[in-house]
Length: 274
Image 1: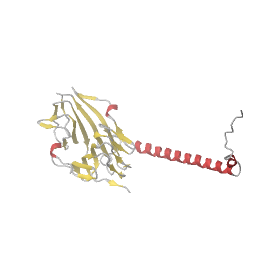
Image 2 (image 1 turned 90 degrees about the vertical axis):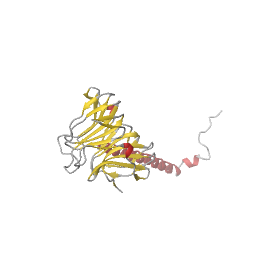
Image 3 (image 1 turned 90 degrees about the horizontal axis):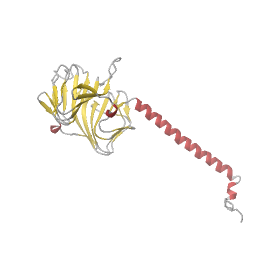
Image 4 (image 1 turned 60 degrees about the vertical axis):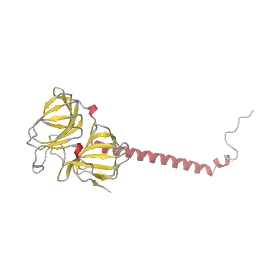
């Protein structure tokens, strides 16, 4: 029995000249298109990598803990370099302070501006009790308080230098239960905790699907994830993760699929770029 011809006799004439050269040209066009797509993809990946390298991203699970006292440890999220001047809005240091239940820690005097945010549990600053998402700031010159953890607790501590006119008051507390959530944009509410000139400490509460378009930073922008997941361009931040975007950089897009609560420190007014 003869082996069947794999080419249909009706199709065979289309595979010979002058049609053959057309098929070859189309094949080259397809290959060129594939190379073009691959080139664009590689270009996009390079741009994404360069943008990510300009940011400082920290994940607490990867950071070593340093003991401050019995039952008290710190993880440094960011520390400014000492061999140059500070950028606009750059913190000297941002840390997570973790306290075991019953632990006590004599917090340092506020020789610089201190900001505290309770991330988990509750603590006492002297006689003042702070619970979840309560915020406290201490201008330079305030005496440090003994912090007592009534239960296992985690605090965020930001240290920075401010102009002498930044605040004239001593320690001030903003309580979560008493503060509202003014609408900021579609699906996004914002609470301003502290502000001076054009920079501020804020909490953002965004619904799932909320998006913030391309914007630039005139001050360093810090983002600490309190709840949910957030994409800052191509970097995924989950609960506890931290990113600092230096002044002069930009975020192409910020979006969440889960809904979020974040602490942010940076520009009071976002600077959108067309």
